[in-house]
Length: 101
Image (cartoon, rainbow, N blue to C red; front, top):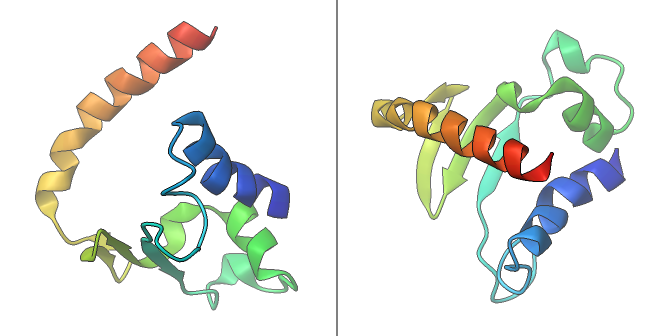
């Protein structure tokens, strides 16, 4: 689980060639904030909170801040206009998969 978390954070930043500014918590790097409510049934019995997050999914994020702005509060998107990005994100994902495979 910890390796999966590193791949999703620092690994992603490396792929984008932005690991000098993103991907880990270090002085002078950009930082977003995500908080999870680990009291949900899906996390019950999880001795390792990192493993719980990796295995149970991001949909349980209680609060997400991006660039200092709250984007998710109480598990719900705060900015409804963010839903407008879903079709574009799907298209970008399809292109990335096609290029990779």
